[in-house]
Structures are given as C-alpha cells and as structure tokens.
Image (cartoon, rainbow, N blue to C red; front, side):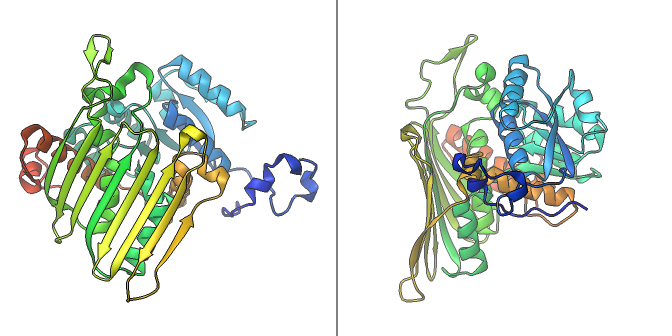
Length: 408
C-alpha cells in the first residue's frame, strides 16, 4: 500500500543551495518515492485548472493524468506550465466525453467557466467517477438545485471547491471559536474583503452577470460559506446594497456592456439569532480580508494582507481578545511558503488533502453540494435585495425559487 501523506521540508528540498545533496542522501526532504495512488483529469485549464494541476503535483498523492479544454491556447499554456515542474506525460483529449470516461482516470476536476458547470457535470456523472466541481456550484439557483439532486442520487461523491475554509487564519479561527470556544457563544460575525478588480478571463465571461452569476455569486460565495460555518445555521433575512462605482464603467466586449458590481454591503440575520455583515470592495490597490467574531466572552480577529504590488507574500494573523476571562494573544499564522504560493495562499493544497481523503473513503469536512447551494442562495438573495431595495425573507425567497422543500 502507498505510504500516507507526510509533511516534508519542502523549502530545503527545492532550495538551490541543496542541489548538491543526491537522492541517496535525501531523508528529511526526500520526495515521495511511491507512485501517486490516484489519477486526475482536469476539465478546464484556465487559472483554476492550472492551480489544481500544480497543487496536486506538489501534494503527491494524486497525479494529473489528462486535460481537456475547448480553447487550444489554454491547453497549450497548461501543458507548457506543467512541463516546468513535472516530468509526467499528459493525455490531451479532443472532447469532453473522452476526458470523462477514460478508464485510466480515477477522478474528474471541473474547472470550467461558472455558467457551464451544470452541462459539464451532466456529462461527467455518466462516468460514475468521483467529481470535484469548482465554485460557485452554478450561476443560477435552478442549476444549483439540479446539481444537488444529481449528487443526492450519485453513486460516488461530488465535492464543491469552496476552499476558503482552509485558509490558515480561518482554520485557526474555527478551532478557537468553535472547538475551544474561547469567546463563548458567537453573537455577531463581520467579514470583509478589499481587493483589486476581477482579472481577465478567456472571452471576459467574468465581467457579465449572465455568465458569472453576478459578483456576489462569483466572488463571494466563499465568504457566505464561511459565515454559515461560524454561525452553525442559515440566514432567515438578507438585506444588501451595492453597485458599480469604479470598475469596468466603459468596458464593452462583443457589444455587451459589463454589469457586475464592484462594491456591496450585506446584512444577515441567522435563524439562531446570530447577526452578520459582509463588505466587498473591488477597487482597492491590495488585498485585505478580515473576519471579526464577537462572543459573550471576547473577540477574534482573523486578518490577511497581501501586498501583491510589492511582491510581498501574504501575512495572516489571528488575534484573540478575551478581556478578563482568559489570556489574550495575537499570532501570525501561515503554511510553508511553497504551499502558500501554490494557490489561494495554501487553501487549495489542503482542499486537495480533503479530496484525497474522500477518494480513500475517509471522513472529510469538504464543502458539499448542499453547502454550495446555500452559499449562492444567500448571494442571490442579496442581489435581489440590491435590485429591489427591500429586505429579503429567505423562506419566501426559497419558496419563490422552488427550493423550500429541499433546503428546509
């Protein structure tokens, strides 16, 4: 049997001043000497597809077997990048059906544009293989509900790519707030992201709500998933304001004008009484995320600053402020540099660990299709609130979208 995953001294393993150490003398930073147990096919080789290819390779528990994309240029760039860090040969498929049904592939990773998820998944499930589906689960509630129904009757599993739950600062916040309960019962949650605009995509699909689902679905489903985890509940009311102030005001692509928000404010009231807020701003020079949890015995602040303009790495911290209850402290939290730089500041790496757990039949805390549906249901309710100017009663909203029975 293959050996289980064990952490390595990766920074020494790849350091230029350690190249004189031959394989026979490598012990503390020896690479895995067994063949990965699982073979993955990547469907969609854009930014996220390439991130998953790299992360799977450095983790070493699964190897990338094949790739498929409708854009030849994306395939070529993915192959070129893959050759820079892996000696393995890739299988390039000519069509989606071949990529999904190759008997040499053990699992499929769907990383195609948001609006294609359901149609791609319908083909993928014909294989019966385990499936990883990138976030957001879909761009519409109807598509997401259909995916949940497909997953319910599926013989294997479908994992949703909501990987922010594995960011270092949020893992620590979960441990302190939910396991150790250092701040007592959580009463309020405030989460914010300040960042630059959406990056370029093939055919610029992320600039249009028709294809992305809208900013709150495309970008913010991660955060609503986190808020649901900390609340241990789902919202009963949603109120939001937002719009477009700076980004893409004059952006036009193929006679279509960009219509996505670049800032939003969302207020949530959960069924268990917890109240929460979310703030998004997408015209800032750097990245800054902050989570503030307030309980009846203290406060936790989990923060991440990424000054990408200066080529600085991200710095994440967690602060526990306990007053007179117990000791207070502030800590820097991080993963090894090579892992943090592999994608989404290390979260994708640990998401892959959860994927491998599922492939092995072990328990995992990865995002389920139902959690994926809830994450975009909140976003969709917030977008309706922005359009209508009204507070949204979630039960009524779900009923209007024919979802109340499956999400009770």
